[in-house]
Image 1 (cartoon, one colour):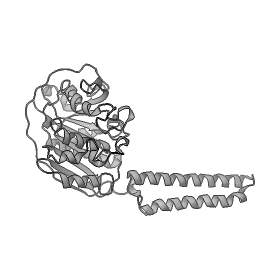
Image 2: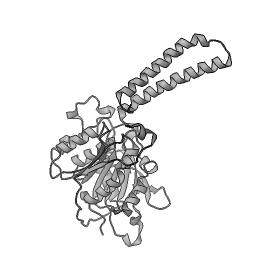
Image 3: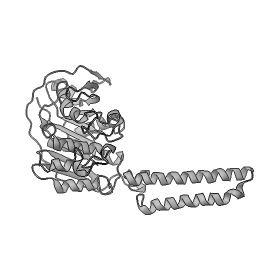
Image 4: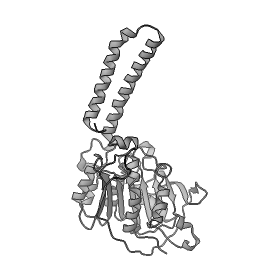
Length: 363
């Protein structure tokens, strides 16, 4: 039986009930306080607890689609699966842009001078928020002192942590390898989006922190005025995983004057957090398809697997809804659940794609 098949889930419930009933039937026969019977009682209770936990974990996995097969769960079987990529774009031209200003509330958190952190109050949103900035190796070379670089904003899912891009997903190492393989160097900006632990999905909601304004109005200005970041929107992209993938497509399609490219790694086309549960799909703020109907001049990347029931149906909706001049590149694997292991396999392709659709480094 497959991991996410309903028969597996119901079999686990039947197994749990059988153990509970068997324990109840045996319990009077195990009432003596001899060591064998005490150990047998303990074993019965332990098996009941384990079987109940198995039911709960299978139910959670079936709902969130974290793992879609036993092989994926236990890390066995082939690492790569067949992936179909469609709509790969051509390269973009390059333009010159200016730079001015310096951000003061800033400090480095590593000895290389490449990784920076800032906690700054946005003048438009009024939100004081944390973000990290990583400049590529090429940025620090003396020969590149006057070179400005494209920017990729990375957005975590919920309840993901901002620093997990660096500590867990190792995105800095992935980018370095992608650059060695031919991708363009880019500045990475990683903002906190789950403000005060709330699943706002990058939207400005009533009586909530204005994270949408922070991402589209404050953050670009702060970055452009502090680092050698290109100022043209054709050099700015945004990417995210899971609900962060929804953010990436939502921000790109609704604010094409800020971001030219958005990469959704196993994302949705509507917000799904608890603040949006009771809203009809047609009125959920930031939904991608209404903005996509206006055919903004942006580039989108959507990745998923056919086994991921959370992100594959939205990807098919995107494929049916977009029209020129919007471009859509898709990468669909045959297997893989809604988890970091599946997403990380798409990161090298993501950097290559951004190199193809964003303006590159320039003097």
